[in-house]
Structures are given as structure tokens and as C-alpha cells.
Image 1 (cartoon, rainbow, N blue to C red):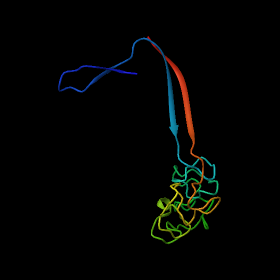
Image 2 (cartoon, rainbow, N blue to C red):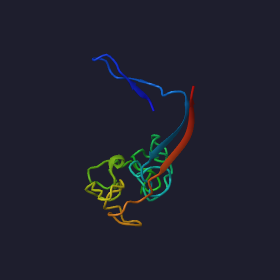
Image 3 (cartoon, helix red, strand yellow):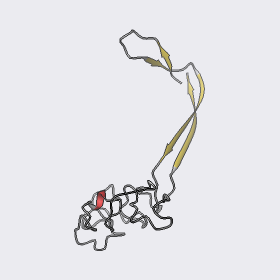
Image 4 (tube, rainbow, N blue to C red):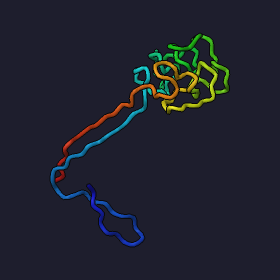
Length: 141
């Protein structure tokens, strides 16, 4: 752990490396829920219960009409309809793109309550939270 060294009154604190030796570090990172297990988190997945054809991070991939709805759940992937359910929220920003919704998400799983019925219902979060733990030993000389 870095140690703090006194610094002039107006300067920012100065941090230095710890003394020479071996140290164990553990890094922990949590991801976001993914209900269908396709590697795309619910908040970005316009088809949270169907495995996506494309990657929503790449414009047009898996979305021939580029309306923001993946081909896996787009009723007509050759007709551009940026608001498939007509609720005023564009597909890409809609947490329930095929059903008109209020954008409420009681369980916080990033799937709109009106769509959140597969498996659990709107009061139980869908998808596991991925956890990565990485441990390493470092040597400071």
C-alpha cells in the first residue's frame, strides 16, 4: 500500500511505493446481469431473453434495418422502425422495446417490468451478476 509523505502546506499529498518486499493483491470486479447468457448485459441487450445475432456495440451488426433492435427479436428486420412498440422510447433506449412500457424496473435488472415475466417476474432480477476475482503476488524491489 502506498504511504503518504508530508508535503508543503499548499501542495497535494505525495504518495510513494511501499518498502521493498512481496505483496499479495486481490482485484474484484462485478459486471451487469445477462438474462440470456449471450455475453451482452441486459442494459444493452434489446433482446434480453433471446441470444442476439449481432453485437449491439457494433452499428448495424445483427440489425439489417439499423433500427436498434437485434434480428433475434425484431419482428421485421428489413423495415426500419426505431420505436417498435410506439411508446415514445427508441428501441435502443427502451428497456422493453417490443411492449409499450413506462420504463419502470422494480427489480433493477435493466429489463422493463412489462417485459420482465420470463422466468421470474418483475420483482426478481433476471441473470446472474458476473464476478471476477484475480489474485496476484507482486514484488517491489
